[in-house]
Image (cartoon, rainbow, N blue to C red; front, side, top):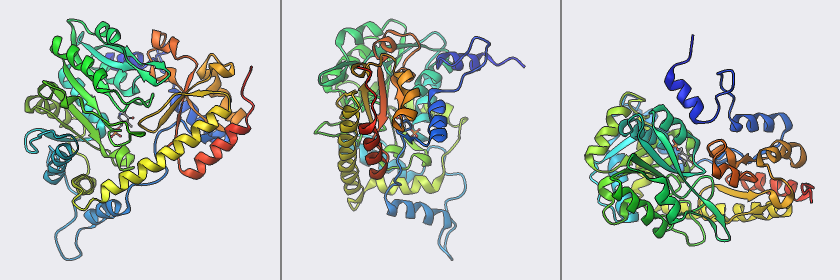
Length: 416
Ligand SMILES: *Cc1c(COP(=O)(O)O)cnc(C)c1O
C-alpha cells in the first residue's frame, strides 16, 4: 500500500525520507541504540533521572485511588478543556510570575503535553502553502507538524558568539514574508540553551505584527534559567497578548516528562481554534495527573517554588561539571543559561562533523551526544554553520554526570 501524502510530507519534513521512499530512523534512535550496545552513558536524550516532588506524585496516586469510602478517583474522562482547578492554576501561575491576566474559563486549554498544544495550534491555523517561522536549530516536532499541515518552514538562524547563541534583527526580518502565518518561538531554547533577550523577542514581535502573524511560544523550560537570566514570555511584550498562544507543560519544570500534562493560553478565538483540533487528537489527558499538576502550579504553600530553586541550583552544578569535562576532552562549550542542554563545538578538537564524532564517542569516551544537525533542515545554511557542534544533556543524576565527566576527561579525543 503506498504511503499517504501527509506521511510523505512528515518524513520529508524531518529529513528522514530515503531514496527508496522509506524512512530512516532518527539520530536519536540510532544514538540510544548505540548507548545500549556499548554501555555508554546516554547524554543524548533530555529527560531527568529524578522524579518530581514526592508530594505531587502522592497527590496523583491519591487522585487515582480516591477515598476508601468516599468519592471515586479521577479515572474517567475529565472535562474537554481540562480540570477547572488546573485551568485556574495556569491563570494564577501566569499572573504571579509574569503579570499576565488570563481568564481560566475561556482562555486556557489543557493538552497532552506541550507537543500536542503546538501540533494542534499549527494544524488549526496553518493552511497549505502558509509559511511558519521558527528558530534554527529547532525542536524536531516543529518541522514534522509544519510539514503535516502542508506549511512551508522558514527559519531564523541562532548564531554562536562569545556570549552564547543569538539572533540578529536582519535574520529575523529576512525570515518573514507576506505569506508568514505563524511564528513558533522556543525560549529558553532547546538545543542551544539560549534565553532570548527582550530585544531579540522585540524583533520577532515587530515582524509578527507587521505581517499580521500569530505567535505560538513554547515555554516548557520557563523555570529552568540560570546565572540571573530570566524568561520573558513573548505575550508580555506590548501589543502581543492579542495574537499570542503561550504553551507550556509540567514535564520539564516538575520533572515528570511522562505525565504529558501541558497547556496553552491566549485570546479566546485562538484557543477555541486549537481546541477544535485538539479534541479529535487525544480528546483529554489523564485527570489524576492534571489534578496533581494543578496543586503544584497553584503553589499555595510555596513548596513548588522551593522545589524549583533546588532543581535550578542542582542543574547549574551539573552543567558546570559537564562543561569542565567537555573542555577537558578538547571541545569548546557554549554558555547555556537555560534548559537541560549544553552545546559544544568539536572543531577545535579536529572534528568538523559532529555526526561523525557522535558515532565515535560511545566507543572512544563511553558517552552519547547528539549532533546539532539533527535539529536543522538537512543541508541548510545553519546545518552547515553548526556541522561541528554536538548537544549534551546535564539533566542526568549527579552520579551519572560525574562519571560522564570522568570518562570525557580520560578520553583522548583530540585529533590535533
Ligand atoms: C521536551 C520538549 C517539549 C515536549 O513537551 P511535552 O510537554 O512532553 O509535550 C516541547 N518543546 C521543547 C522545546 C522540548 O524540549
